[in-house]
Amino acid sequence: MSDLFARDGAEQLDLPGGELLIYRAPDLGASSDALFDELQREIEWRQEPIQLFGKRYLQPRLLAWYGDTGVSYRYSGIHHEPLAWTPGLAALRERIQELSGACFNSVLANQYRDHRDSMGLHADDEPELGSQPVIASLSLGEERVFRLKHRHRNDIKALRVPLSCGTLLIMRGDTQENWRHEVAKQARPCGPRINLTFRYVHSSLAPKTDG
Ligand SMILES: O=C(O)CCC(=O)C(=O)O
Ligand SMILES: [Mn+2]
Image (cartoon, rainbow, N blue to C red; front, side, top):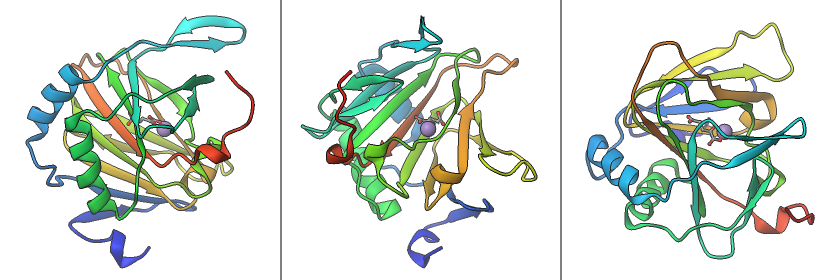
């Protein structure tokens, strides 16, 4: 781990074969409650369909994709053009780039409306993210548990990381190659949570198929 990433109050979690950093209370230029309200209003939230075993379902959360012009990306099997950065998202990108020392050209926004919304086990390993992608994930609103599970080793226990309002998590190195992550639904009722994952998409690495 370079010193660059162990600065400004970052906490490094022990993740064999990966690199995980947490900023518990980064200065985001506004209070996390104010940011939550702004993003909930400002983002064009949509519930997207997903195809599973030949059947079409609605994803159990709301999402939206913002980025620089020309960046295109496939997630959940769907090809997306980004929406133009809102002022709030653009300001957060600047701040998170400073903190992480990485560069991002897009952000995937997810809103978990309550405890029943979720994201299944996956890795952010699409070809267009390149090798060893840096993913910066900001959580606002209700706390939810981010669970990581090793992809190849059953002897390593899954890791549960509660992500409270205002927490910035950075995944880098071989994290996506060796680990998958999820936000499972939970029994305990809770209110909405917004998560932003800032990414750098190399459009030239995208598979040539269209969708
Ligand atoms: O909501 C989270 O903390 C995780 C989001 C995530 O994994 C993703 O957007 O790929
Ligand atoms: Mn992910």
